[in-house]
Length: 145
Image 1 (tube, rainbow, N blue to C red):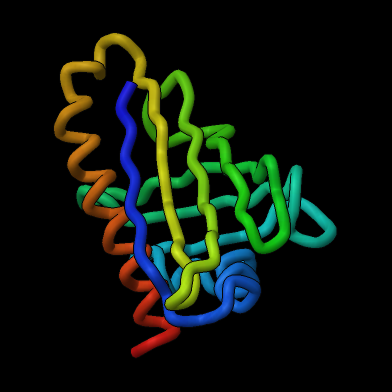
Image 2 (cartoon, one colour; image 1 turned 135 degrees about the horizontal axis):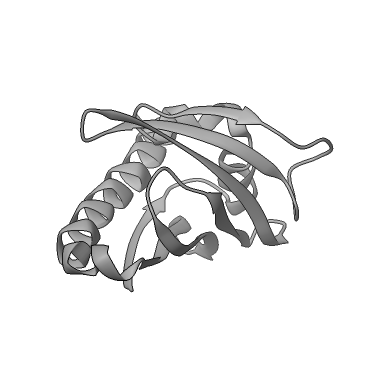
């Protein structure tokens, strides 16, 4: 299993950053190359499912993701239901905390690979860490330019 986490402070109120992050049409603004399609009905929250397609490593990768543990202005977790490569589980979180300067956003991932892919964990952790850092930086740029 590998874990990664990236955090950044955005100089905006927590409620504003949370609304931005939970609007699925904004994901392509902060996740490079993402295309998102809502699969469930109703407002964003526990049980929301969406399809996320990314270009990574020269390939198109499509996953189905489900939102869990949704708490307004605090964050949510997400679990990959189907993945484009063999994993045992992939769980992440996007969490928000008010600071004196605005909102700290933390994006985290925990991925458990099938045994034959485990030798690649160090490389995949570094790649995931870098992608997460770029995502939170892009979210900040969306607000602050």
